Length: 138
Image (cartoon, rainbow, N blue to C red; front, side, top):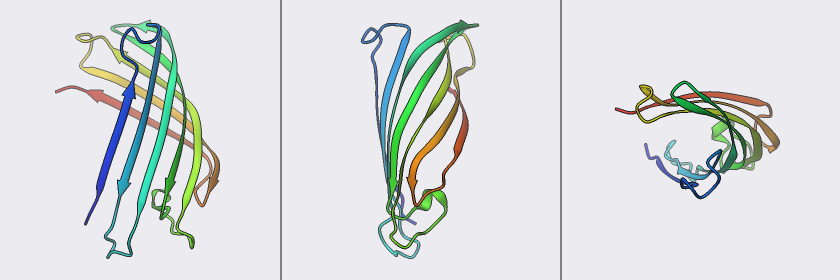
């Protein structure tokens, strides 16, 4: 089983944007085979997010970020489908609510809830996606 991945992420440095704002961009690339090597599964995703701080909560800060991006796959496997022309692509947009803890304020460094909508997908599922993520340091 082969699997390669690369993720590149750029975030605004403290002081580069007003303190009440956050901004970030990321690019993810992936490669897949074998599934007894019918060759070239490939997937890519570009995502941008930015937004203001809504409030200071407990030992952290709550941000509301607008999210937009584009993803493409050569085998539509991110949807669990396999289409005759082997491509899947589409844009997505939505909101991400992120609570980021102060350095020693919590055992968790962040809690995020995202709600995204697919926009004009081709050979991919259309609909809403929701996710919850929790980050904690060791």
